[in-house]
Image (cartoon, rainbow, N blue to C red; front, side, top):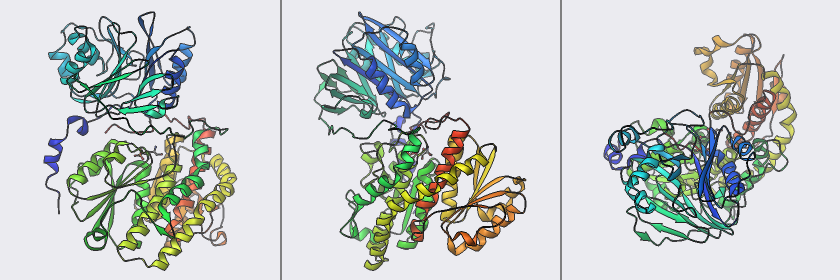
Length: 631
Ligand code: M6R
């Protein structure tokens, strides 16, 4: 049944949830001692939200100063180290540019004309041009090309000595999504904040109060934590926090669970976070599986769907995600269909949200996201909910928007992932899908208890096999990286689940090494792409699907006879594959349903070593951000 309410649903959404959002990180602190070190550390931790430029504004002797720099936090830190700053009140920002190029003028904090307000902003003001035209003086000189600056001027316009009421009046004219942090010259011991549609938390640390886009950015032990949303306003001093509704009326807010995350923000001796996270995969997969398997059966602690739904109602499964998370869906589709007998479609979230999705009460919609903040995936989740589908989300970050808005969640236990290129979260997502497929298979009556036992037994061996694979393929991955690092193009191929892994391998390689890497379903090569193959062209073939072994092997021979240098990533006996110049990288054997968890590992390592040889910024590749909260 086509979901006819979709248009109505879009009309009902606040604009911020339909539109774009700038992906930035903000932090602010009022303390008893110098806050600059904590602002810098916090911004460093928020770099996953963007790293085009950064800046801070702080109060010194009742005067507000500002330092900004293009590039990463390290550039801002260099600039700040040239001055001696002692400040107990400061706000900071790290930016992923949407409105205005990544220049110093466009870097936050922005200020109002007479310098009464300095503000940092995460989000997007959709009606900034309209505000400029209709609400601000026509001859106002703007210092930047950003949408944010209009808010600073609006505050000044509405300011009558009371910042909370100025914020209330200014935000009443905004359309879009925002989390603001701001300092007002008349109140040098205070930071104000407001948020709607973008995350903002207030945290009491051991040494003062903070505002931040993510509580993980805060260096101190969290004593109390509050979320600011739906136009609420906050006011923090070094010893207290106050909250106001969107009209500026004081409100009491409920404290949230302030458990401190034990996830490390350190590389712990590894050259890069990506390498550290690759090596953490056995643990990530084990922890994920341990949380979902108990007493020999799959148990999904945060899934509360009536048994009847699976046994009587379920007709169709749809998986929606972006990037690598989408690739886990491509793998999962085949396993789900095999273990449950239910047809499963896999959709790219940014496409799905504007298509004509056939989802209804008989559909199980699965949303996959490491960050839990991906704007397109979140929009699709809301759409599917509106259409009456049952929802299960597979999410790594607890407390994220997707986790909060999903009725049922499977939490992956990858731990905090910092490298932009996902590895351990990817593996944890695959593990979650294995457990979910077995669960649905059993509920549907398609899998017997014996089959379930067999799968669970093999899953218990998977973390160790991942460890073994990482150890045994490492040297080969380094060698192969040397072969491909000078090439501008690399191809990947595979069929069925091998194709899904080929897609993930090519995304990983292009993302961090900037090599043009493309993946193809092996059978498609002859329909066009093979014309690009020249003498020496690197072609990586993923070959695990034994039932179509001979087919993919023929495709390998076809590209080899046109000059390609082929590397085969496989769990099939090497003797059957060695020939000519071909390189074969073998991974251990496991059940066919789980093999992509092993086949993907050499591809992660090849990408890592290739990017290393090319001198790329592995953890923070250019133009990217870890969390894509913009449509
Ligand atoms: O946080 P999400 O899992 O929703 O992110 C989805 C993609 O942006 C993400 O997987 C991206 O493709 C990775 N950087 C790939 O390594």
